Length: 180
Image (cartoon, rainbow, N blue to C red; front, side):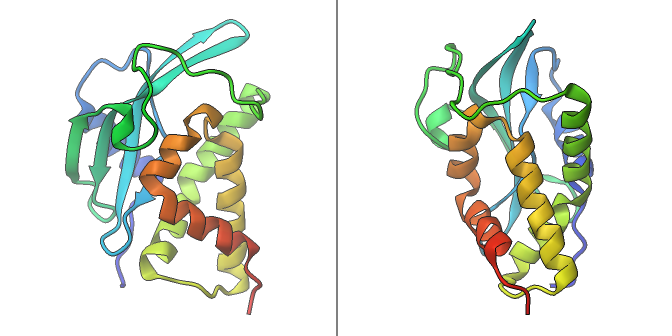
C-alpha cells in the first residue's frame, strides 16, 4: 500500500461538512481506524453539555465512515448506541468513568491537536498490517496510544472499542512491541 492518508484533522473537517447540521451541543469522537481488510475512518457524534465543573456526555447518536485517502463519505447515518457498542438510552447521560480525570484545558487541547496531527500514521501502519516497527515508527505509535488514552472521553471507550476494537488492540500491542 503506497496510499497517503489524510490527517485526522482533515478527516474531521470532511465529517463536519458531511454532517451538515447545527453542531451546538454535539461533539465528535476522535477519528479512528475501522475495519481490517478495507480500513475506513470512523467518527461518531454524541451530545455533550459543558456545565461548570462538570461535563455531561450522552451515548453516540450519529456515525460517519470516511475514506482515509480522499475523505469521501462511505456511510453517514443516525444510529442507536448498540450499533457500535453497548446499548444505552440516547436521552440519558452516561455515568462518570472511575478513571476520569479533568486536566487543564490548555494541556488537553494541545494533546488533542497533536493526536489529530499524527494519528493518520498509526492508521496507515495498521492498514499495512505492520507488526514490526523501526524506532521512529514505534515511538510514533507509542505517542499515538498515549495521546489517545489521555484525550479519549473515558465514558465513550466502550463505543470506541465496539467500533474500532481491532485497531485499538493492534495499537496497544504495538505500544508493547519491542523494536527490531
